[in-house]
Amino acid sequence: MAGSVFGDILKLSTWGESHGPALGAVLDGCPAGLPIDEEYIQSFLNRRKPGQSRFSTPRAESDKVEILSGVFEGKTTGTPISLLIRNETQRSGDYSNIMDVYRPGHADFTFDAKYGFRDYRGGGRSSGRETAARVAGGAIAVKLLSEFGISFITYVESVGDIKIDPEKFDKDEIFNNELYMPDKKAAEKAAKYLDDLRSNGDSSGAVVKCIISGVPAGLGDPVFDKLDAKLSAAVFSIGAVKSFEVGIGKDASTLTGSVNNDNFFNENGRVAKRTNNAGGILGGISDGSDIVLTAGFKPTPSIYREQDTVNRGGEDTKLTIKGRHDPIIAPRAVVVVETMAALTIADALLKNASSKLDSLRKIYLSDN
Image 1 (cartoon, rainbow, N blue to C red):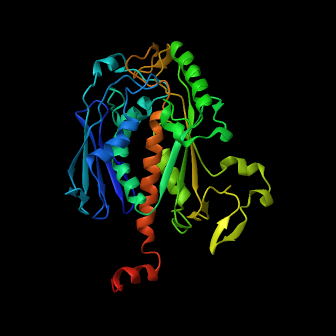
Image 2 (image 1 turned 90 degrees about the vertical axis):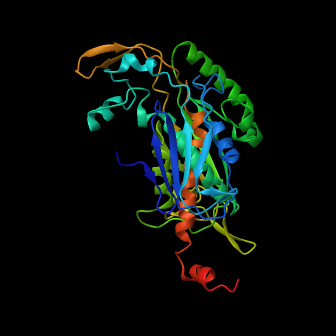
């Protein structure tokens, strides 16, 4: 299977299946000397792990990470960093009724069409559980970026048609409710909406927003490797993401150029913008302002209502899904969006180090 490696210089490889013995990641290309430990990585995995609220699957995995290589005496060595997360509470029997049946909204049919084989126990590699390995590796990218003053605010912007009120945005509230929403009243309303859906065996979609601050101007390339194109690939690689926008996104198509353009001005000797409709990226290159990303997640396809489908023999049948599933994906995906964005920005930062001769002179001809 191709396609399990992400990045150019900072490369993340993930491996493992939802119901296999373990999941894991190998992060290659991380500079030596970065302080990192299991406790730090675990803090990110704890944001993603299941069984934490009534809005996530009750599959109670600890998602405890083990660093197997690439770190010595609390710092990265510059060699590949290998990370292991063991699966502890698999219940493969929950999936016996779908062994030869395609679940609507899942990758069952397409996986079978491509490989002529599929791991029906939770979807195998196409399971959302694969993202635990991404988060483990991406947490290191977040740490690397923090060394350069780059930070993230990531949250659920809307659940169904319930949106946060920008006037009531409270950064501290994000971690005070089960839905990671920065608006207490919106979170309470969304929670009731989800409770009603759960009682009817249904699920909801949602929108996740990620704001990246402190990114210097000049990251990204102007043709095929545009920074927004790379970020799009990163976020779209997350299962259940159906839309991606930078800045005001598709709303730019409704504006005139005079309204959409972000006017520049001199801010204490620094080029700045009065607005940020572009979302921090111009011509595929970061412009120094906040990078603003929005990802739309579809409703969880594993619902408890009876659905029409077909089996591997092409016969019409009915299906009622069993098992342990999230009624909404987005709250646990917040940290996945954040870490995938971090991997992208960190990779661009490393690539950018060799974009100018002056930068190389500072490294190799410095007297320090």
